[in-house]
Image (tube, rainbow, N blue to C red; front, side):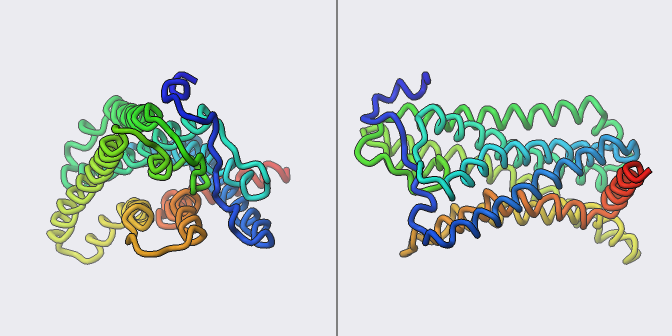
Length: 318
């Protein structure tokens, strides 16, 4: 409420336009599709977390980081998807200032925590492959806990910075947000006053710097990893070594690929409906793919999930 009261806007709530321009007959089908993807995302990540915590062989830095990644993904999805699902079938599309600010804060916090964790997982693979003799020292339990904590601190700082910048602006004129969530760029278009342009540049600079910084460090890690892998004499050895990175690298490509589609798309003429559908690829489809990639591309995790699943089924039957 503190943020909402400080910007002296002419209205007390926003209207999330979202899917309101879609043909009404298409909304139930979209609702069912996104609901199933949402439930699968939650169940898939919960299954990964339960498997990692119950299988002591998976109590290694790589899988503990994956567990933290699943937590951030669940929280990000919970912040975004339920309100989107409600907006698909409800005729009420308003959201209060405080609810909008809260959604922006938590979505940025969990979203950037996810990016920082992906960066840390890249560092973990770099140490494991390029400095295997020092792995137990560099990736000790205390060190891993500190890295994970810093990822959450970094995500929280990003959430506070962006939300504070946006909700200290004055909003006037239309209160319609052309999105299904309180999207930062859509909100900045509603702001007015002398500080708007500098705030917009500030938000873009902060967000792009953080994302590109994470991506740069991930790419740098893989440059060193590939250099080491190519020095391995046998093809089988190269394949075995690099196979430990495939699931992480695939998620990174999906994560940044869809983000670039959303935020770096050309400025040409584009319908609002197509922009809305495109936005769901990052907010719904990317979290949906992540547990699939990790469970299918990682043999050790796949076998552990299979054993956990069969153990639960057998215990239920007996």
